[in-house]
Image (tube, rainbow, N blue to C red):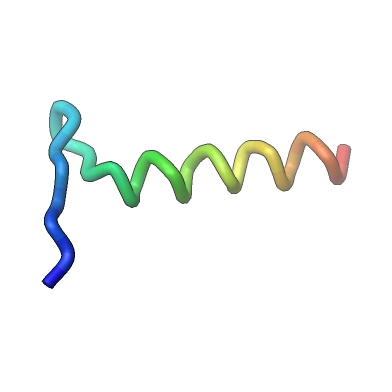
Length: 29
């Protein structure tokens, strides 16, 4: 079972995904 660490309303996994998406688009552009 994966523990969810909450940062405000976001889980750590949502934060990681958001960062990866930003990096992906930064590299594409």
